[in-house]
Length: 282
Image (cartoon, rainbow, N blue to C red; front, side, top):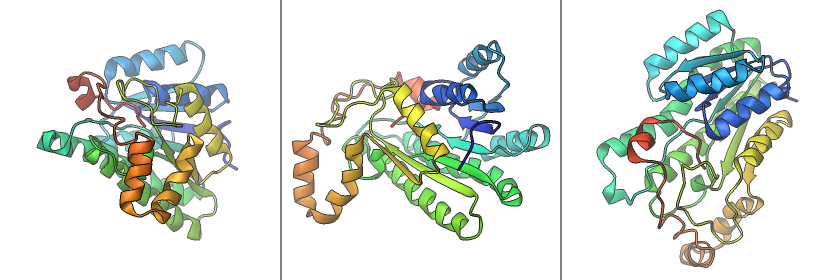
């Protein structure tokens, strides 16, 4: 079992949303210290100050997870001064929320760089230390969007499909020789953090409250769960895709459950913030 108590935890995109909540909850569960990575300096310092005022040990780092050089520099400093984290939660990510034809080249590149390469870069930076120690836990926040197609989500969905495939493959590699190195992959539906403002919840798929999602992720870590999908209906998606012909799947999931129209009125955060802030999303 992974123990949050007395652990050093690093959370990317940890200055707001479920990242901030997971950090706070981890400290409440008696984590030894929290390392927060975020691209937003004001939110980063605010989150760190709130927690340090409560007596917790918090180390904030302004890091763009799409930048391998920044990651290498920050990770080397952390390993040297704090040590290799026991738990890494790859939570940072972005969404654009347009049809593919309306994506700019910058939109595409930024989404893939943050959501896919960022997750891999961060893990790669600390994995050698975890392998040497023989223990650790890596949490990758993918999405229910990585389990099915969705209009106005093509690039975001592709990035989460990539994270899901990579995360599960990494788990298999580690399990072969490192039984105390764990990987948990999280595939939530829409979370009520503001990143997906304007979306319409699909039928039988309520928008998840941030506190409930953050607690569920930490509980999954402590139980060494391989997959966490929320809400429970998300567990049905791979089954339906496997047994239904594509057109029937489109009809049932896309039309009957209204998944394919859920992004029709997407607003999200202001464009400038969406492209420059690593915030938690579904």
